[in-house]
Image (cartoon, rainbow, N blue to C red; front, side, top):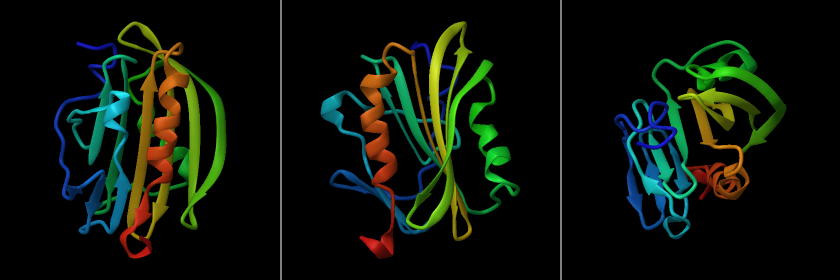
Length: 164
């Protein structure tokens, strides 16, 4: 089991399908490019996640969670906290307002402990139409920079189906 085992990899509930290197979800009206398999990202199930991936080499994980039936209400800083439940000793390193396809969002980076080991975590939460979207990336601090470009590409590739 990897360091991030208790945080990730339980069961997936994806509603879309993979076409080439892109996940398309017509029920929720979006698509996203998958992390590069050549970079070591392997699909792994995560309870409640639409998509989740693990990098055994980096001992890292990333996921996309989508909630359209009953998304949390409230301000984004409050809503985004759900991404960090289960982490101990959380210390926020950075928080910034972001926009993706004209939707308001929040990017949060923090350091914490998970399974008695240090981790660095980045979450990006935003709302669009009736849905709440969460991207999350977790890695040991020494490996975080290596996987972060793949995570950023994963986040930036998200698009409404009508725009691509």
